[in-house]
Length: 68
Image 1 (cartoon, rainbow, N blue to C red):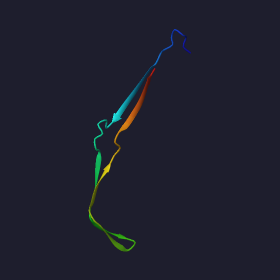
Image 2 (image 1 turned 90 degrees about the vertical axis):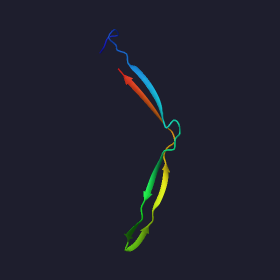
Image 3 (image 1 turned 45 degrees about the horizontal axis):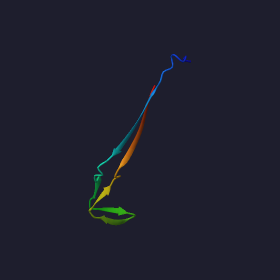
Image 4 (image 1 turned 90 degrees about the horizontal axis):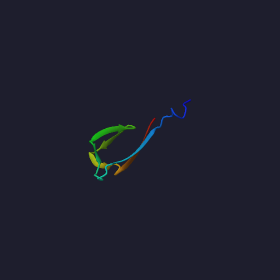
């Protein structure tokens, strides 16, 4: 056990960050090509399909650093 004269103090720091602070359009493009598959003995045709999937607009991050 440390005596009062030997007691060490710690340091606590907090951080806040925001991902995509300018609210840019983060899109992932999915492309499905044409194909023919056999499902339960029947032929199923799939055509090309392209679509964009939006991601989260803004994500806040909170952090805490403790040093002792």
